[in-house]
Image (cartoon, rainbow, N blue to C red; front, top):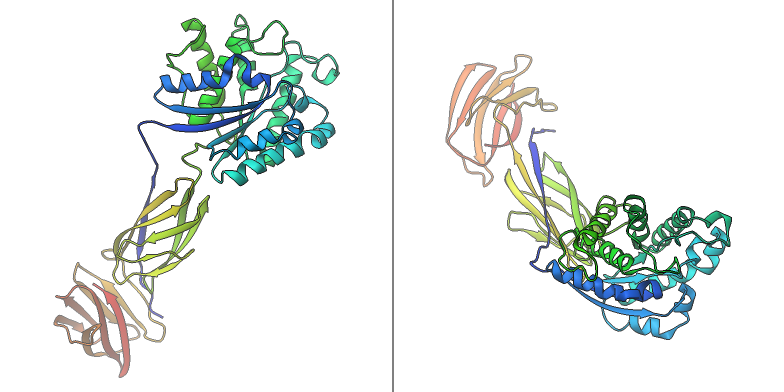
Length: 420
């Protein structure tokens, strides 16, 4: 079998969706930790000051647990009321910090039920858990959470577990809370009850949600509410650090980038064909553009090219979740001086020696005779032959493209296909 040496190079190019203003619709399902100080509206004001927009709606009841929301028809009416970019779920302030087994039976199943409902209503919605904070002095009922740090760590672990169990993300408000307590202890995040957020606490939560939703820093927001500019800046910085340094930890995805497409490929050098393997998420259908005028809607197609050259292959993923495109520039060529082969049963070598010239040499002193060059239509092509001896000849082509070389070795017919 004849085998040709091809060089395949690729440059991976991803396209992303950009727009002057980023909009997000957000449904908050929670309790007083959400509605204190109108935190969702603070988020909308921060977003507006930074050139973005948040349309927020809340379904909140004081002291509500995950199971309480599941038992409330208003919760599901809110979920079903429109297509959401984000559905934020918040449990009662203590329930995720309770013992592991208790959380597994009394909280996790209901959190998952709410998440499943959100996903069923809005295919492209992201469920985002509101990681709340430990109480100022912990919960004295339990030794395991009787300090802020103990309770905060238990909440952190629980909300990450909720997210992992329901294909969701986390807005790490509790982590930002700890950062501020550790680094700016003069900023009081609590009201007098040591549980609910002060205005500064709600502002910190809103900044954390802004960074979690838009993957952008809230630093520079001109909306500071009742805070001093210096205090607001510190809270903005805390949220930015805690979210943007750990995007993967919180499983955060921008709502315009849920759909993802990428692909790899393998080339059959003998037949000039390429096998493509797609890697897609949140995509309903695909379109392949092979760069030579041909397209396909097949999954993992194989495509044969007529000629070597550079082709831009593009994979487009279509989805209600905005879609995505990935492209790679593929170069297939016969390099200068790079073609040498030993044909099975032919006993010869064929080498490129200049841009349009090749050397055909027999092995074992076999005689080369009756050389004829044809194109793929069977037409005889004009070439210049320079016999070096009975066993070696240089062939110079005037024609570009795929060619067939007929010749004999000691009377045995041979056929060689090349691309000049």
